[in-house]
Image (cartoon, rainbow, N blue to C red):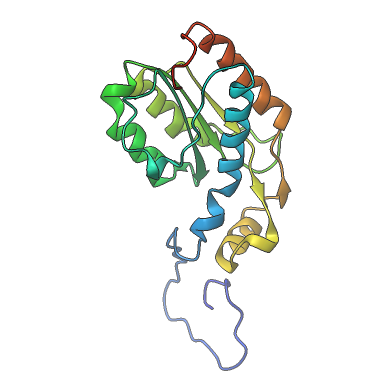
Length: 193
């Protein structure tokens, strides 16, 4: 109420001293929807690469037991407040030694609006890329469906004046995936990527 996030319906509040607004990120976020747009980007990348004849598995980062069976790995994460989501970040950090011996690409998704370029959105992905000696990192715009967001998520978007809607550039996503497929063409057929 004091921070203006919730409007009082009755009563009064008296402030003596300084008021600070604190928001615990993660509280109120719906984990089922927070990574959905990113999963759809991953599926599109997988489909584009698969169309070139490369065998592809698209797997949620939290379900990956090991990257050992793969010669190449593409890892993506939704980005919230400049940070990769835990499962993808943990996969890269936990598999860094093995990933250094493979072809690796990373992508981040989440900024809203196609013309927004904020270095903070790429920062953690670039750090992870450096950690594993990867070949490239891209940031793709995300999607915010007002009907699927919880109260806290909607409030945050309104406070930072981010637009609702699907801002993903599918042509750019497929183009990036096709460039990866070109590099993967040198890997023998039948090898999982």
